Length: 196
Image (cartoon, rainbow, N blue to C red; front, top):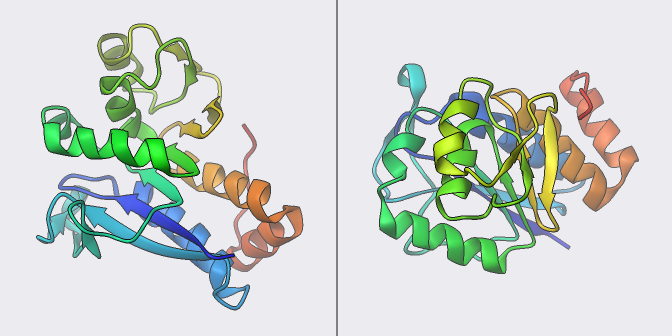
């Protein structure tokens, strides 16, 4: 079964927040005859995205029209601050969360989950510099500063800053496809996984 992985990107997105998970899921699929995941990027519009430090990216789809999403990856970066007032995007996030199998937030992507109330009374991780802001965004959330990633609820996972998204992505691959496939991908990428 091929699962779709939609990765949310936006202006001032942190590059490794989306590129890390993109690499893990797409390489896993590549090594398994492209039968594991179909990975694509999504943004508010089809306009070019200017990521942190100037990387230019063209999204594959806009939030108005995209394939069904099995796994949603919410990237982080300074641009999440602007998204907190984007009602259309926030409503889209609520809708996709309610229908997809798994949602992952990377780094400060947790801000968006806090804004729509998905972290209330639940454990979460984010970038170490974002925890103070999360006291405002999710005052009822339970921060896990000492964790690299956590399972926040039955279908929601959150990770710490930037590179932690790679480890969380491997964890999801292992849960869905088994440890042998996750190890093969890590070996191919020459990546040494870090645990929770």
